[in-house]
Length: 133
Image 1 (tube, rainbow, N blue to C red):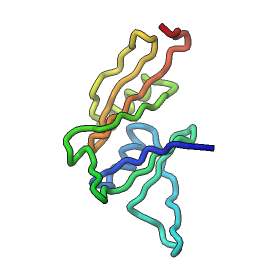
Image 2 (cartoon, one colour):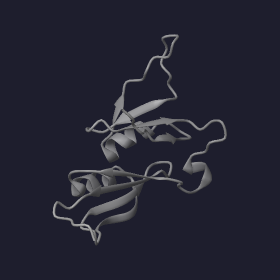
Image 3 (cartoon, one colour):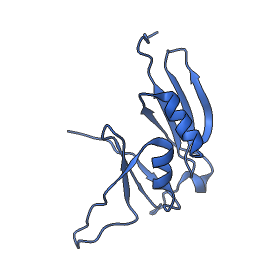
Image 4 (cartoon, rainbow, N blue to C red):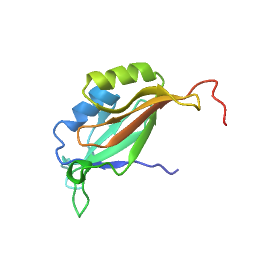
């Protein structure tokens, strides 16, 4: 089985996990122990109800977060069941709304938001009666 895990870089990891929980509905996964038995505290994993995961750490080896570059370089799309509730939750938690909740011509509804360091997120709910054009 193959899986893909976005690995996001954050300059300041102190508030990010709590923000992603409040705004976008992630929950923190217990850290993995490294061979010496200690936990790797600069690495954080978060997951959604369906088991989808993201991994996060501080930039190293020449990589940089959107906070340091001033712009996002990737957008992460997440399909949700109740886009209205999700949008309300994200807005109340202080997510930067880049594009407000709107219906697209394809029949789905969604919005774009940036997290605390500028990673771009696109949350979408597909219309049950949407057809391909």
